[in-house]
Image (cartoon, rainbow, N blue to C red; front, side):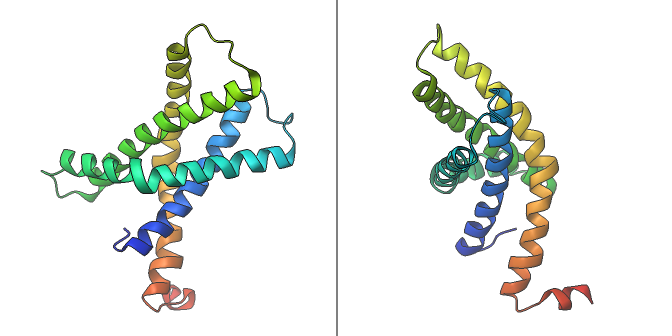
Length: 166
């Protein structure tokens, strides 16, 4: 989809925004904080998570996920396999790092009262992964691709929305 660095940045911003928004709501729900956290607290939680996720996406997880996925799909020409491989690798990497972020913020706010950090991490990671993979593949991926094609690709090619409708 994105063919330039600028397009990759736009695509990443849109995808990251959507995924972090839904994952923040999901994690607030899992932790019983939905309705208890203030609006400002929720927004600040989202913004911090968004910044961290975007940096991970642009500089760590994204580049490695794409390299791994393209190696895994080197023997196929089907784009859908490449898209699914990249999405899966991205979700694994982002769920891993953002679960660490989530545990750290939980320990900061609630104190450290765990018997096993590793067991708690695995639990958080699996919950995040199970929610994030279908969210990425079935919901956000298609929505972001549509938004990207309609508003970014067409705008850079000099097309307007009226031109694409005809």
